[in-house]
Length: 242
Image 1 (cartoon, helix red, strand yellow):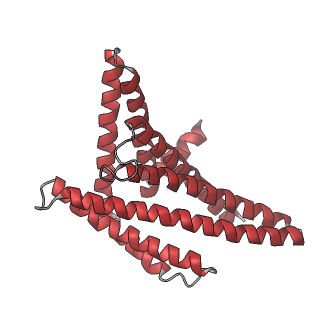
Image 2 (cartoon, one colour):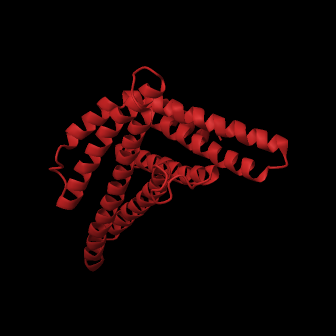
Image 3 (tube, helix red, strand yellow):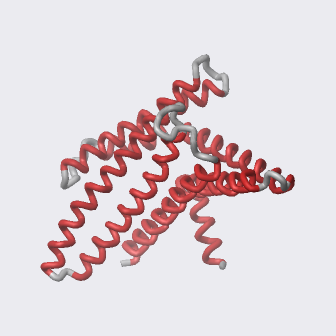
């Protein structure tokens, strides 16, 4: 129990960890709130609770939007350090990653302008800028799926090679990496479904998802993000101890 609390505290003390926790609570609240408002047409108390959870989810989403006002420099530093991916072994992975970084970098100023327009800090049409940011987010997610698929193909080739050479420890490491890429595909696919939902009506299934389904997809993606963060943290701790 105490160890679990300490792990949660460490997670909340980091910006990325806190953002992932807020994201999980945000979508989880939307999931539960959506279910309660959907099934509680005659139950006034459940419906009131459901609406409160949906409002709470909206406030957490707004909180994350405000916090992202300060993410431009960290994203720029990451894009600069990655550059054109000279350290990548595969050209396909390299250029997909570069395009992903471009989409992510452009996403932030578009969202900032949309937020500032909604807050009436500037005179602009926020709906246009929200659309730009959603398109960039969706593009980044789609590129992320393509990158993971390419990495899976490369890992599969390496796995066959080590099966012939009987490299047991290396095979298990490759299998872990493949599972991580599969989780990334599932996470990006869930978020991509929501990104399409937030596009203008008439585009695929835009605007057709009920609140509980948006919450479910977001919760799945958020939990995968927490799992991956915990896994990378454990691997770094193991590397330091060794």
